[in-house]
Length: 92
Image (cartoon, rainbow, N blue to C red; front, side):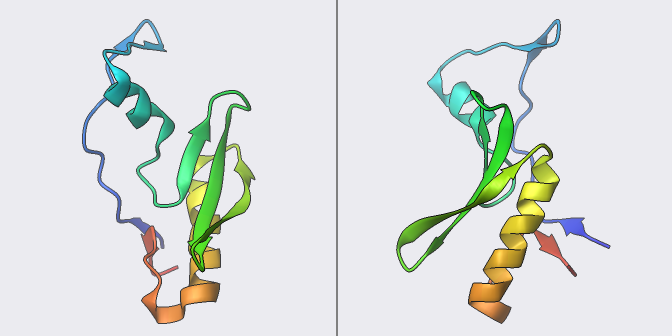
């Protein structure tokens, strides 16, 4: 079973289902995932997954689900970094 390593650092205030933005730091938080290598694309309304390999960012794909994007990142990280990969989930 997968166990998330990421920790949610703060909660985003909601107002009738819409996110209330207070400043640029809140907006940045909304576009970032708690998972390594995952970010929200507000225009496409999907989660994007990418990894840095050899100093260059490599696009992994886009996903409807944040966890699926994180698992895809873990798979690519394991292929390239093996036992030294920094993963989002343990045991997977």
